[in-house]
Amino acid sequence: MNVGKKRRLERIFREDCKSVIVPMDHGVTLGPVRGLMNMQEIIDKLVLGGADGIVLHKGIAKKIETRGIGLITHLSASTNLGSDPLWKVQVCSVAHAVRLGADGISIHVNVGAPREGEMLTDMALIADECEELGMPLLAMMYPRGPKITDSNDVEVVKHVARLGAELGADIIKTNYTAVQKPLGKLCKAVLFLW
Image (cartoon, rainbow, N blue to C red; front, top):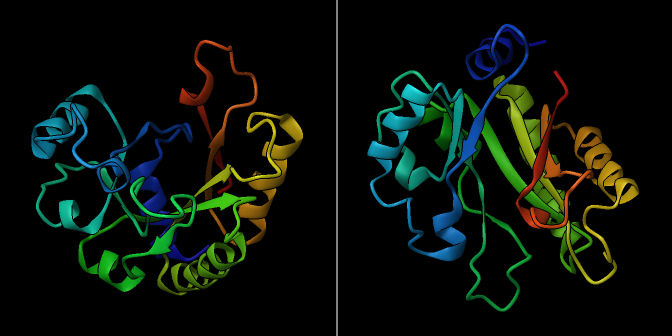
């Protein structure tokens, strides 16, 4: 493994290979989100609480101090106001994230969505850039689209997780398969492939 990638992963994961990574990229999709207004204040609280990493878009990432927490810059975006909210497009480069001091890169792919192919193409190119620059890649791989009848189905989730690994992700974030009905879509699972 590239020494740079190894060092960056060690800043995100503890010695026991466990990590608490808090995604805070929802403002792009949803607009102002209650609880995600004063980002520095929230990050300071996460540091005190023992979180290991945060996922942010480039605009917020350049305005905050990480205080030693791992910074994962998110490269994908769409809004719930657009005509195809499932189509995530690249809005930042790996090189820009490196200039921001990122410890990792995050992308989002909606597997099963009408424009899945374009998202997979972007993921493959980003994975290559990450490998070249020694950047860990976190892939948010979600089963979403017209053919997906149960986004928590074990076989479907295994497929999207395998897809992420096959295309070069070091970490996969996806739906949790043992979901209790009241928790439903709030549950996510992270698979560490390092």
